[in-house]
Image (tube, rainbow, N blue to C red):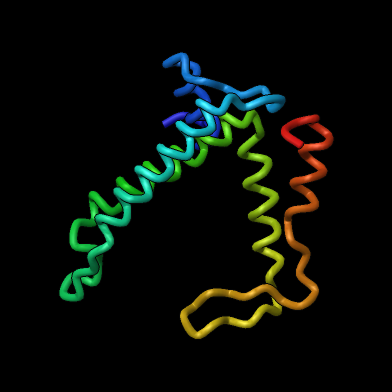
Length: 136
């Protein structure tokens, strides 16, 4: 494996196959529609794999399930490439916000809820977009 991040690998894939790479200024409707269509296709593929095998304690076909998850991540990063934004930086913004959920209540199903003084990431995302002059 190499030292590229997942986002950089998807961007490299776009370059290698002459796929659209956005500059952040304008996203053609055709590219927007393609990105959304790919996300929906991969989500539906993942949805088809959501069959839990209680005897194994795993999805019934773990290989297909994991493949579908990674395919979905790939096309999600691809949409960020199409938008022309830095997926690594933005991932870190979201990661940082999520890591600051200390004091949040754990919901019965295991979801960690936001604490009262939690700061959502949207303002940092907006600041990044303004600084880069992209898609506002």
